[in-house]
Length: 129
Ligand SMILES: [Zn+2]
Image 1 (tube, rainbow, N blue to C red):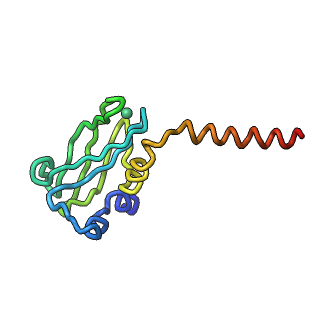
Image 2: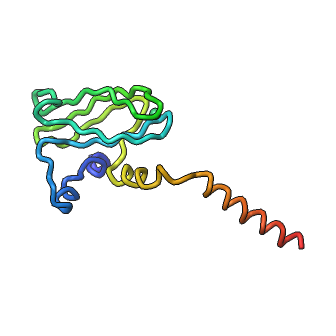
Image 3: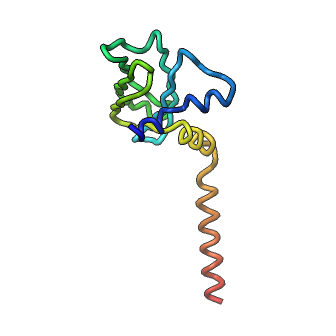
């Protein structure tokens, strides 16, 4: 439970930013195949299915890169807190992890790699001299 709370307990952060989406629940998922992260909003009134002790959310998530479907079922209690989450083809991540991915996704990875190689090369040359 502590793990899921960490993943989904984003309510305090929303309050700090001054905006609370009272009807939306946000889920963050990363595709196992291509690593793309997706943010999804489920509407409490329209997207959740009423169950005896809470709600379930059934969805097939598709990212915008490889389009591989990731079917998921999330179980929520009466307070809209996630008590269980199943997903295939991807995994649930925290809002913080999603934001980190968002920040770095447009950075050219090649540049980082080549500068590392340059450093290694210059080290080798020094050692050789
Ligand atoms: Zn993908």
